[in-house]
Each structure stands twice: as C-alpha cells, then as structure tokens.
Amino acid sequence: MASVEKSAKTCTINPLKTSQPLGGASAFMGLDGCLPMLHAAQGCTAFALVLLVRHYREAIPFQTTAMNEVTTILGGKDNLEEAILNITKRASPKVIGICSNGLIEARGEDIRGDLKLIRQRHPELEGTALVYASTPDYKGGFQDGWAAAVTVMVEELVEPNLGRDPHQINILAGCHLTPADLEEIRDTVEAFGLNPIILPDIAGSLDGHVADNWVQTTMGGTQVNDIRRMGRSIATLALGLQMEQAARVIEARCDVPFEVYPRLTGLLAWDNFIAALARHSGKPVPASIRRRRSQLLDAMLDGHFYFGHKKIAIAAEPDLLVGLVGFLTDLGASITAAVTTTDSPALAQVPADRVMIGDLDDLEQAAGDCDLLISHSHGARVAERLGIPFFRAGFPLFDRLGAAHKLSVGYRGTRDLIFEIGNLFIAADNHYHHEAEGGKDAPVASH
Image 1 (cartoon, rainbow, N blue to C red):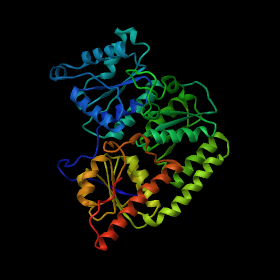
Image 2 (image 1 turned 120 degrees about the vertical axis):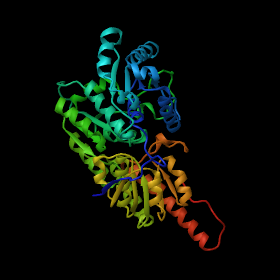
Image 3 (image 1 turned 90 degrees about the vertical axis):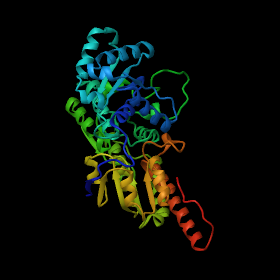
Image 4 (image 1 turned 45 degrees about the vertical axis):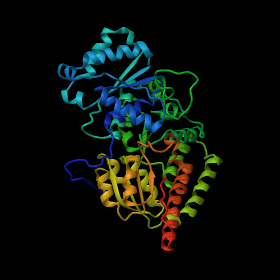
C-alpha cells in the first residue's frame, strides 16, 4: 500500500491537473443528443473548450451561461434560464448537462431550485432532461468532476422497479478510458451475448467518425432511454474506483448488484473481468478471446526483458495511475516517482512506496535518474529537460494524433502497451550504446 503525501509547496509551479468542470463536461459528452454547458464566465468555458478540441481534434458542442461581474453579484438564475431556453430553441437537445464552477459555487447559488422554477415556468422544456452536476474548480480535479457528473446522471435519469433483463448489464466508465478502450470493452461484453449499457459512452460521440449530418449536439453516446432502463440490468460493472458511488446509487434505487474493477490493463486484471462476464452470461469464454490472451502471454515473454529493473516516473489521474503502475510493476519495472492530481481511495492500491498529490514540478524533482517518464502532453518539456524517454498517457494529448484511438485495456491493449513502451526502452538502450562507442548525438526516444 502506497503512502499518500501532499506537496508542501505554497503554489503550483507546473500544473498537472485539470479542473472539475472540464471533467464533468467531458462526461456529458458521452450522452447522445447532449449539450454540455458551464454555468460560468465565457473565458472559463472557452479554456475548457480549447483543451477538448485540441485533445480530440473534433468539433465540440459546448455552451455557457456567460456570467459577468454584475450577474455574479446579483445571481445567475436569469442567465441560466436564458441559456437553457436559447439552447432548446436552437438545438433541441435531449439533455442539457450543466456544470458549475468556482464562481457559482462560492456565491452559494441554489441551482437545483432555479432549475425547478425554470421548468415550472416553461412547459416546453418537458422533453429535455436538465442534469446539473456540482463541480467547483477550487477543489478536486478532472476525475472528480467526471465522477460527479455520472453520479447525477444516474440519480436524475435511472428509473426504479422495471423488472430484470437477463441479458442486460451496466458498464460505468471512468474518465481514464478512451473511446478505443470502450469499443474494446463493448465488443468483449457482446461476445458473451450480453447487451451493455455504457455510461458515459464517449466511444459513440468522440471516436473520430464523420457523421452523415451535422447537428449542434453530441453525435452518438448513451441514449437517455437506455439510462432510464439501467435498473433492469443483472449487474453493474464499475470501471475505476471513481465509478463506485454511481454504482451504489443504482444498487440502492434498483437493487442491481455491482462490482468494481480498479484497472483493466494487465493479464490478471482483464482475466478477472472476463471471468465476471462468463459468470453473468453463463457462457464459456469465446475462442477468439482465448487467442488474444495467448498473444498477450507471448508479448509478456518477449517484452519483460526490457522492463525488468527499469525506473519509471509517472504523473496521472488516480485511476489511470493505478492501471499504468500496476501494468509496469507486473513486468518487473519499479516506480521511482508517482504523482497524481487529487486524493482518492484508488491511491491506496497503487503498487508504489509513495504517491505525491502535486504537480509536474514535483515529478521533475524526483525523476532525474529514471528510465522513462509518463504523463499527458504537458510533461513533454519535463522529459526533454531531463533527457529521458517520454510516453504520453491521459488527458490532454494535444501534440500527437489519435488520442481517441489509444488502446490500453484488455489483452490487446496490454499487448500494445508492452510493444510501445518496450520499443522506447530498446531505442534508449541503443542510443546509450551508440554514445558509449563514440557516435554522434541522437535524439532521445519519445512516443
């Protein structure tokens, strides 16, 4: 069990984390026909929008209540009402996902009460779900905002007492999973004859497809009607500890049992997930999945020589940190530095001596003698200054193509990680031997 420490610095020097409102809005992007909206100033919304566009390289539907100095003092109910009515009139969304920020939360506005009054005055909103998530950006981080948004989706939309569908299963997806990860999870669940309801399903809306028609809302994702019938499922599989609270809400409301899977990267981690699907479906593991497991075993035999005794420095959101550190230590690497964004029960499961809640400066100070640095794109300059290989993971990834298609779960995703990171180690070793033989300088490998 790792000991968790907080950075003692009085200020953030090189930020690692992104805010709760951005995490909440990103979760709402996984609903079909949704318009995420920040109840905040225009600048706050614009900054979040830029990060999403740079990461996914897609058109991102995003709205704001455009709070200013006057409305911050007098109250933002009128701005909220006007924004909801304009959005409904112009885009006809099925869902408006509303996230607060520190400006609103510090004032103490009763947003749920405001939404109730707005509905009473405007019966034309009857067909539009208004889902509000409290996501103050003066505490927590991206993962906390995502978890808060998913929890309120469940609280507002899941209907109780609908009976049972023996073939339906709920998948609550954490923010550490990419669209490619969710596609792999969906294909695997369906291979057992089960019908998964994935919430939120960014694989439907942010997988980089070209739609036949342009719309002003999200294109694809979890349908509202599917969320309403999640209470019919035989089980809920919560992927990441951040999803446990939402799973508990479904259990309390609909008596649907849940299981939590802290990570899906690595042989044993995916074995446990596959065993659960076989148990819930009553069907044997398909031959194609057994074949992929065999391929991963071979990749582990090929790659473990290059991972053994390597020293790794990593900075990531808590659930992503659990998955990557577990994978790396499975292959014989050691974690010299582990830095994360926010406190979480997941940190106790990180197989490292210490986890620091801090920033990229904390990572840089501890990573000087490491063989590899892992972080999102903002960590690239740290790796350059230290002169060590760099592997990009997490959000945001803005300096490489294909962020939505990075696969790191399951047998295939774990196999690909072995090859990608193993090749960085091979390139770095070749560079070292070349330098030892008096060769010219060569760039340090970077993924």
